[in-house]
Length: 180
Image (cartoon, rainbow, N blue to C red):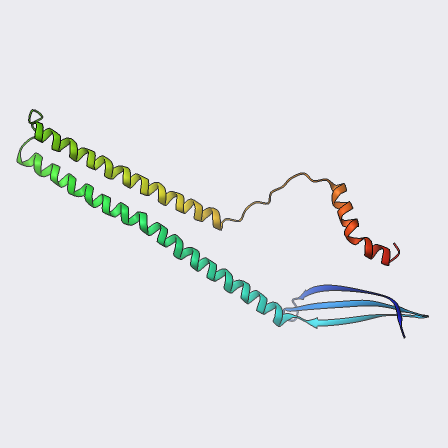
């Protein structure tokens, strides 16, 4: 028997009892000359859905692994720089202590005063580098935290009329087909 019109709908269901299953249900209203009916097709999509979940989870883990490696590398570089400059500061402090222990600083001696001033400039430079590396670490960590935090939805006013008109335009062929 021929059908005058055929309308197919698709629904996806998740069943949790007695065990978790994912089903796709297709329905088609069959209307013909003097008779009507309904065709229902149920497809068990559990395995396909599980494979999709596994692929998504695998990609997520891989992305997190790459992100963690990148963050570890980016944090390691400033830590190395901090370590080096703290060692340099430690050496300069030891030199200053040794100089002070051997002979008190004579500010009348131009060489002693110049060496002392140069040591202070070196220490100040090392401190600036260390502060810069700490700021760099802080930036890397804040960027990392921003990347892993869920973002808030961006709410904005919209025209309900525009949404309804767009929806009606999209559904116009279906509405006409059903003679609504």
